Length: 97
Image 1: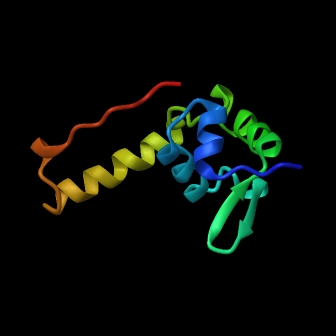
Image 2: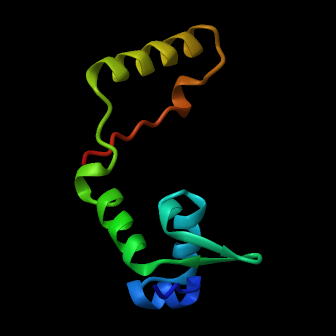
C-alpha cells in the first residue's frame, strides 16, 4: 500500500495542505496515519473512507434539542440576573443542518 505525505494527499483530495493538517489535528484521519520519523504519512484509501463517513452531511452537528436550548437559556438568565453578563451583548445564532 502506498502512503502519501500531507501535500500529496491534499492534491489527491483536491484540498489545501493546511486542511489536511487540520483534519489530522482534529482526529478525522486517526486510523489512516503512519509515522515515519517526525512525518505523518497517510493511507489514501483508508483516509478517503474515514472522511466520507465522518464528514457526511448526516454526521454534522444539528440544532440543539429543546432540552439543550432550555439549559442554555437557563444559564443565560442566571448570568444576567447576577450581572455576570450584559443582556445587550448577547447574540445567539442557531445553525440549522
